[in-house]
Length: 181
Image (cartoon, rainbow, N blue to C red; front, side, top):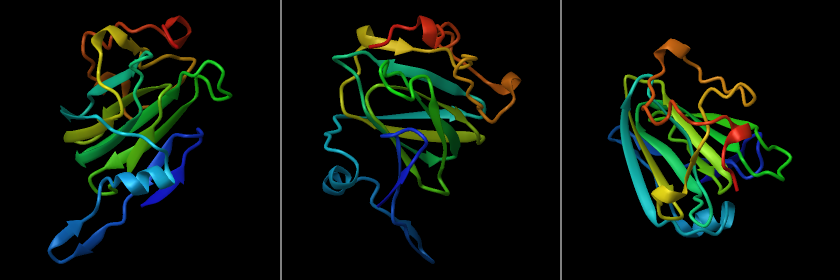
């Protein structure tokens, strides 16, 4: 596994070693010992999966303490633009974001530590997205930021008219008005 830094400290791209031949490919998507040695010590307690079509944007979501979550995310099928926004108030990169294209072809994963809002937009006809969390989901601890907050300025890589949001994701506040830790 190779670790690649993003423009925000602690948000890391995890590139697995792919073993490919005429039969297909094989890779270890997660090895606890190696992850702890190269990224950080953590224990993932919940795996989640979603299936979405082109233009679906999920986010920008986070969990408030004590239910904050670190995530390791990847695409099983399709392609997304995955985004992590720094919401750590005292961070030099507060309000900045890292964006990485994750796909079934590149097999990249993104590690998002606690203290970040997370979202993704689907860039393929159909995408299966999977993520590991180091804390359990708690509905009472949900937090979110509107996807198109102008001060954050995320380039989602698709036309705005193609973006499909849940009713809930249409109503989130801007970062300046969000409840953050």
